[in-house]
View 1 (cartoon, each protein chain N blue to C red):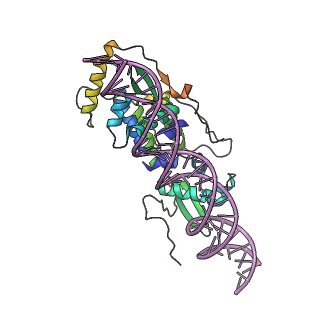
View 2 (view 1 turned 90 degrees about the vertical axis):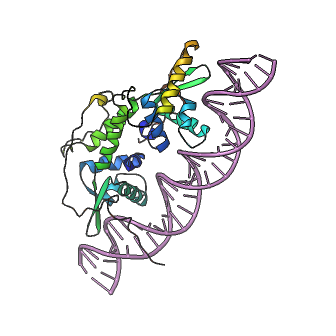
Length: 133
Length: 133
DNA sequence: CCAAAACGTAACTTATCGGTTACGCTTCAC
DNA sequence: GTGAAGCGTAACCGATAAGTTACGTTTTGG
């Protein structure tokens, strides 16, 4: 799951969006950012390590291009995570026996429980941060 | 794009996979990991801040449940990144759409390869090493 | 009441990350 | 050759993240 690391940083995301349009030499990539060129170079190296870009040396230029396969893997993972929940009757796939036991115990003891104050942190927490201006 | 931060850590990913099966109290989540319970608690807090889980207080238990919307946003972003390249010339369009639509979406693939001497860092040899004193 | 259960928080340590500046190595133009 | 262009690497630094132990708080139960 290296693709996750690739998109973990806003600069790297923007690099990927750039390379989505067309392959670019490192210098051209760096020009799109306010940070220093070595910083961009290291981001490109991380992207290489994650397998989401590939590089072609053309003379003294290094041309980077998008390589979407690892990103597709992440997308697939997310689809699995989001998608329809598996049936809890027969054994799904992973070992969740102790888990099901715990759920049963929870449900059993809920008979005398108070109201459920559902609160999703994104709408109440003070730490919703936005980045990538 | 807070969903990215949510899945950036392997422990958090595993927590999400657990909660995909069913909502769980914090202690039951913590039991599935080798790390300490406070560590899991903080991971849960991060997941709350990212909006990918919600919590319901039942007596002295705090039951966490998956909240897939932000993950769907990330999936949509990835689809746009992977998908067919936009026409070159007019303003390219990388915005944010398709949030809940992502759940029921099927995959669409596109294969395009450049005739370059590819050296993608992940599948090829290790990083280029220099060796000199 | 009081103790245990369940959970979050605080303080601290360590590792990693992302940025900077300085520098070295190829390749091209002349 | 020689200088400049293009790019990666090394060394360093501040901020952040993830882990630990210790502790506080609320609920439950005898």
